[in-house]
Image 1 (cartoon, each protein chain N blue to C red):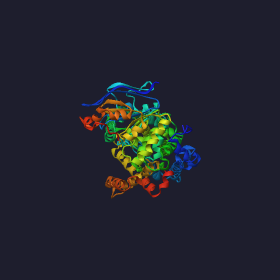
Image 2 (image 1 turned 90 degrees about the horizontal axis):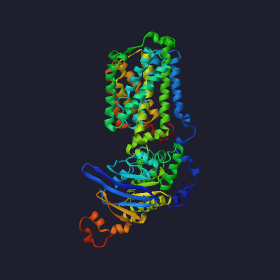
Image 3 (image 1 turned 60 degrees about the vertical axis):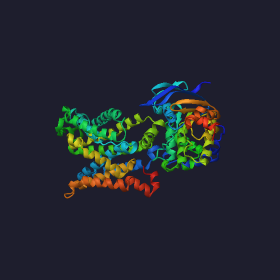
Image 4 (image 1 turned 30 degrees about the vertical axis):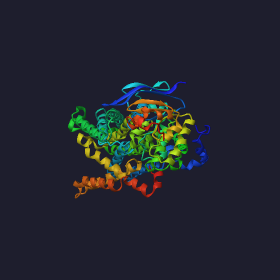
Length: 354
Length: 251
């Protein structure tokens, strides 16, 4: 096209210099090497490495139990970010994936005696497929109506599971002690599941980065900005939304399977903790929705704060009050969250920290 | 020569309002077709029908002989039919370059991210937005946003481009800059249908004009002939206007 004969419009194009000089003005996303050379990719690996090395050093079990919750928060926030931050669809019922994954994983690992990793993957796949099914239905809705429907999904799944015999109805399921035998006994099993959860955490962040740097991600951001315009520009919004909804279910479901196996039991009220579903949104707002590092940072920090408040004798009943206040402050004074604030202080950071 | 786009007997009703009623027209390759008419005549609705935003109640639309009636907009883009919006729809949180990259990525060629970015940069130079590539779309002026609309549509490499009032809201200088841009597109082999109120621009750009009023085509022909048509004058100015004014005024 560019080499076509001259016209009124082509003239200015030729005037503005050979394309070589435009090189630096093209944003960094077009660098060669893809995400493997991206700083956030390496940051994720180093972070995951530290999460494993630090508690392992000196067999610090208490620290491990703290950090596993941080990892879960990061997993939930990162995957929720795919919907809220990337696509602009608020999902109030994101925890449903985590809980369902826990149920499916636990069922396969304890009742059917599957290998833990296989059970967790199967949980991820089946919950993703279910999400795809839900997604095709409820993603016809937009804005507040979609958000309401996600609450509907959460409540519906909760009551279904509470009445589903193979999943132990409202009493839930327990992991028998000998289920840990294949992993070399409970002590080792706890460490192994911890490592796996950390791996899922790292994968969540890398998945977020990979999507953000892809054509698919560009399409999602376009949908977030203006779905009508996105469709007119050629994006099949219906398919994009269903795929991302389903994708955002996969790793949380895997994490759920691992976590509830590690905890040794599951019941509907802990699997589908409504409050945690809402707190996921606070995590995103706090860290900065739409960014990989922001979601992780928000998830990690919020989880630490929450654990501190819950275990503090004087403040334990106030943790949601403080969470609500925090959300209010963030929305009012730093609508872009911590990362948005960083971007404002140092705009160049946008090129490095996604 | 066969028509690029053929619209045959298209009708659309919104509740009690017949927004577009039995409209037929066609456009050949390389033409610039003007679509004019008073406010509320159904011009934008007609665009929305052609690119699939609205589904028609009756009628048929052929694009290069392919039936595209009621195909969703994202499908139609892949065939080579792009449009701009009268009320601009920039992807506000994204940069100008990203906006246009979206157009290239999901357009006719379905380009990969990197070639799309290069193509987008090329288009931005062509429409004169290259120096704003890294600014957020929301911070463009209205003239800039209209250019962005055009750039995004162009990045999709359309065969047919629907321009919905790209000149509305621009000042005379900006209009003077925009007119050669549109003419240049046609020189590159892009067929154009433009909705426009700025008659001066329509006169200088298109040889053939349709007039839409209350959902139907009431006149067609060269811009000068159409502007002199008593039916058209009445549609714009009310009953009896043609007689009162005597000779048509064309501004």
